[in-house]
Every structure is written in structure tokens, then in C-alpha cells.
Length: 290
Image (tube, rainbow, N blue to C red; front, side, top):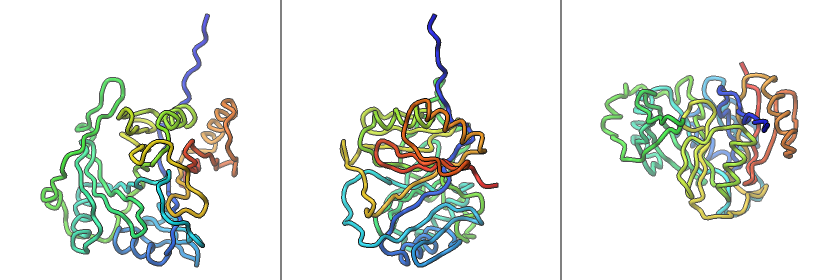
């Protein structure tokens, strides 16, 4: 009789926590993410800026000495900031248009509406809000199908109240979209090692993954090409990103799974694990602070 071993699944409550970027001009980047994008500066030193909403850390900027020239490597495609309501996204759009922010696109994805920008050092940014779940195209097998059509900006602006004060409380990082070297290896890692579900499969171009019933917490694509080299320590861009889990018990469960799979990782503490995906991207799994 064959024993069927259940697939490891990370807790459905798991979600992205914060993201860290390596930057060349800390002052310029800090000013951009606060004055233009909408984050709040929580703490700053000569080498780092910690930004977020209320007291919640969402972005850490780290100054890099002697940064390498920007080149085509794996790393961040965009970090996606999720706003609580469509009204908030409308306020953001008005702010971006008024202040001539570097908007590069705006899309309706079926399950969300999104604005796209680049920061001064070329890092991609998405600012979005989700549509009600009853409008999502959720298939019987759990796939959540997205679309990409033109955003109705006028209608979005109609939803705003014009009271922009930066990102509102309860804003978060909704997902992180990555540039990867190999989609098959990426899928194996995020489904088998991390225990996420494949939510949308764009064949040989992109794959989206999530914990629980969300449309995606991780996006991945090979639009730069296959076998893209990994970033080096002095490359600008993504340093690491985090997943937040609910308890040290979940950390222990994940660690046991990794030990059984014999994968390489670091135990930073009873509440934090560090692992690299097949693209050289660092991921920290941490207990969510209450």
C-alpha cells in the first residue's frame, strides 16, 4: 500500500511583511518614498531609513558603498503596496498626478486596480487596492484568474475624497513581484519548500503564488530572459523581503519541514528564519509583531 504524504502548506495567515532595498542615494530615495509615494519615515541613521505606516515597517532603505552599475539580474520587478480602499487609491492617483510622480502605467486586473511607478533608482512600485472578492474570477481548482486592461482613471478619481495624507493606516505590502532565472525551479521552491499555492500560471512567462485564498503574494517572471544571473552584494535593488507568520510554533513547523527536505537555511532566532530562493533572493520568515 502506498503512503501519500500530504503536501506541506504554510499557514493561510502568512503574508508579506516588509522589504529592504539597497540604494545609492539614501537621502533622495527617502524623500521620494515619503513625499511622493506616501510612506512615513519611522527611523533614520546615516546608513538606513525605516519607512512604513503608523508604526508598521514596510520598507527599509540601506545605503550601499561603491554600488555596482545597474545590470540585468534577478531581484525586484516591483513591490506592491496595498491600500485599504478604492477611495484611498483614488486619493493616491490625484496626489501622483498633481505632483507629477513618475507614473508608468495603470491597470485593471480583475481582482484589483493598480498604479505603477519607478523610483529614482529604477525599482518598480505598484500601488493598488483590491476589488471585493465576489468580483474575483476564482475557479473550482483554486486558480484566481487575472486580466490586464486599461484602468478607468476618471472613475477611480470619482471615488476619492481628496483628503490625501500619505498612505492610510492598515496599508501593507500586498505582494512582491520578482525577476527570476528559472520558472520551474522557482515554482518548485515556492510551492514545495515555502508551501505556497500556485494561483495563476502564465506558462513559460510568469507564475503567481499565495498563501491561503489570496490572488498572489509572490509574482515571478522571466521577461528579462532565462538564466538571468543573481544579484551581488553591492548591486542596487532588492536586499531581502519578509513573510510574516503568526507564531513561533509556525516557525518551528516550517523549520522542521526544511530539515526534512534537507534544504539550506539559517535559524536567526526562535522567531526568524532566513533562506535563499533558487534565484539568489533572500527571504526572512518572521513572527508578526502584535
